[in-house]
Image (cartoon, rainbow, N blue to C red):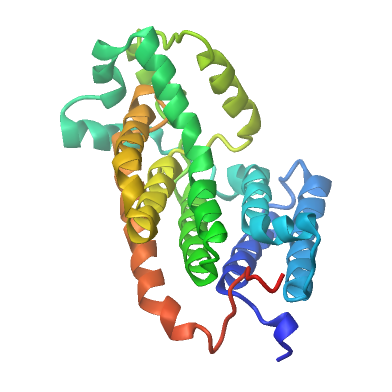
Length: 301
């Protein structure tokens, strides 16, 4: 195969997940309301991936092109996440909030989002929303570090680990749709203390809600899964940062309950899925490189 067209494992995983999205879209086509948007979005994703693969190893000094190749997995992920809401309600109309809340109660003997109300105060609420928001930037921190150090193989392996974590969670949303404690009415009735912050709490909450078209994303907790995945990557490649990031990730885990986005079992699910992905990548990555795959980004771009 011409080296310009060699695939990375990131390409393959993207393509496999894209096939799932196409299947879901076609399966639910009669019920789907955003037919044109779904078609355009899924078509764009495939055209974008083909473009990246075709021009991956063509040397360029264009900074925008380099950045596009580096961030290609993130761009793909963002649009893929936006496609979930198009078909999910028609693939699985069941909602599992009651089951998840009951599991929490059986495991702990109480509802975490209700019990944690004892410590709610405006300053802590503000901090919790900052931590919840910080999660969105965490993958880019380790990616930027590996890029600057020109550790392209490690970058590729880390991105593969991350996108497997994302995509597996996305598929589980289809299997177990759930809205989370902030929308599950029996818990809403018990959650009597309002989450009022100091400065930007409402802005953060409203912005996330506006951008999050898919609301059925409680189980598993992607915040838990991805923040733990980044922490694992930091432990492997930049141990000095652990002193900072262990408290941050711990705070993110607490914020998931405090801000009423997740059940406790969602966090467990996210952690378990993270370790499954880590095991798979560690076991098989080196077996297939460089014989079958090439890194999705290198200094050849």
